[in-house]
Structures are given as structure tokens and as C-alpha cells.
Length: 214
Ligand code: DND
Image (cartoon, rainbow, N blue to C red; front, side, top):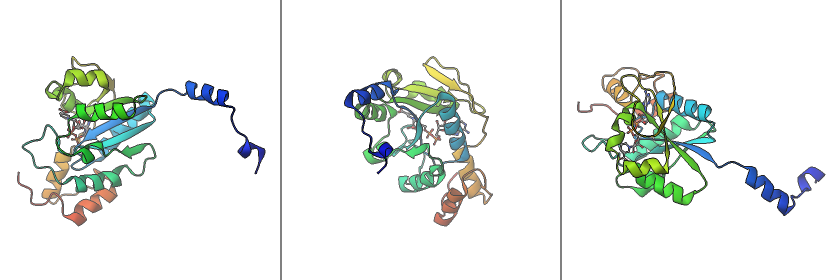
């Protein structure tokens, strides 16, 4: 064994090293991901890069709190597609907190749980401008903004002005949505390049989004 490998740190040196490490900065991109698309990848990567975050956790909802009336496909399909979409980026992970908790996926409950489990971590919750407009309707929003730093990205057709404390990050305008992709599949149109090729194959092989009610 070489000297380099066998060398051990003195305890006081290790303490100094640990104290100099900044808190973990982790981005969370919560979503229904029905399906995940390249817009999700672009905003996650831009925010990670611009805010110097260590990683981005993609967090699929079990039951989206704001989509009561809509039919959302089973979480097993959304999770499988998300896995295929994000697995090529070493900075991206999937967080199963909401899928495992089941029930309505209120962000307040999720952040409270994550903060209890990882008190040293600084969380940055990333939302598109459509969700910025919706923030006043979120469950326990006044408490939630004290627990997590919201990060907003621009989205064509939506404003980003809000009375809530939100960091703005500019991303290229991306006029892609999950609903447009579902509509295209239903109409028999190509979704190539709107989703990753593995996700495109999965949608096709599982027959997702065909014959959907309008
Ligand atoms: P969506 O279902 O809208 O996400 O949910 C976003 C997150 O907000 C989830 O974690 C929800 O649980 C949470 N939420 C919403 C409402 C109420 C509450 C919580 C509550 O606790 O009361 P999508 O799968 O549609 O998209 C994921 C994210 O990506 C969204 O923030 C969306 O705005 C954003 N996005 C884009 N941003 C810019 N340009 C585009 C985008 N496409 C999606 N083209």
C-alpha cells in the first residue's frame, strides 16, 4: 500500500476540514411529470448551474394537490419515465418522498419532512412561472416560504411577479408542456425531441396517452 493511501487524518485536522465544508445546496424540481420532457431537464440544469447547487432532486407527486379533477396516470408510469429522462445526468436524482408517503402531495408536508431528515441542507424549490402565479393557492404557503427558498423560472405566457420571496433564474423560453405532449400522442403526431428517446419508446410501448378524453 502506498504512503498516500495509508495516511490517516488527525482528528483535529478532520474537524477543521468538516467545518470548512459549506451546507449542502440541493435543488428540488417537484412535478406531476405526466410526462417528463426536455423543458424539465433544461430548467433543472440552468438553475443548478446558475445557483451553484450540488444536485437536483426530481420529486414526482403521488397525488398532485392542484389537479383534483384531472386524470393523472399511475405513478409507476410517471416514475419509470422520469427515471429514463434524468438518468444520464450525474447531478440529477429522483426523490421518492411523495410517492412513498402516498396521499395528497402537499409541498409543505414534503419540505417539513426533508428538513427534519436533513437539517443542514439548504433546499431550493424550483417552479415555472405558471406555478408562481398559483403560489397564493398553495397549502400553508406563508409557512412554506419560511422553510424553503423558492426559485422561479420564466415560462412563455406567464408572469413571474409575486409578493412571495422568490429568486428568479433566467432560462431559455421553452414552449413545451406535458399537456401538449399528451395531445400530440393522442393525435398520432411525433413527440421526438420533446421527450428523451427512452421516454418516447416507453410511451409508445406502454400505449400511454392514446384515446384520452379531451
Ligand atoms: P406540476 O404538476 O404543475 O408540475 O407541479 C409542480 C409542483 O408544485 C409539484 O411539486 C406540486 O406538488 C407543487 N404544488 C403545486 C400546487 C399546489 C401545491 C404544490 C401545494 O402544496 O399546495 P409539472 O410536472 O407540470 O412541471 C414541473 C415543473 O416544471 C413545474 O414547476 C412547472 O411550472 C415547470 N415547467 C416549466 N417551466 C418553464 N418552462 C416550461 C415548463 N414546463 C414545466 N416549458
